[in-house]
Image (tube, rainbow, N blue to C red):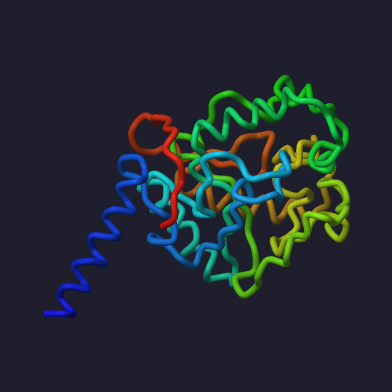
Length: 245
């Protein structure tokens, strides 16, 4: 009887956690726990320098069909000893609003490494920040590729890291394979088909692009890391905060 009661409580708890997500959304860990997660907007290692509202937990949530498609990408990469690593998934609209507010604020230089050759006030016009995002529909993912056996080095918010489009040894620490820039690097070098990156960096981007495209994802040409799942129903945006799994 006791075992039956425990199982019932666990099932009820899991259902309650799922009900906090938008309809037909899932936590990625429940679909494929082997996909690494480094949820940047739940902490300070992002272009705003602080956690964004709506990220009550450092968890990737996605619409179910997008999560299942991502699992198929992961299964293909595993055969080569590689793993996907996600930086952002579902993004509540309140976080999108906070990005816009930050972009309109004064420049203090604290996160300039993310946009070394641009002025903060131009990031909207340059297409790096927008008022609406498919992230808020749970169908967009920011991600990279890392060796499956590796772990991410610690980020030190007090350290002075080099520009995101500089040599990998100078950038903020990351265990991903070198894509030529860091994540959320507002630089022309981040354009998926930039001609200014090395042959090895190009090969790494091509590997990610091919794997994602094969399983229904479309890349945003300015950001090698940003992909949108184009299958399933028309996307609907949400502002439901991300809670603990």
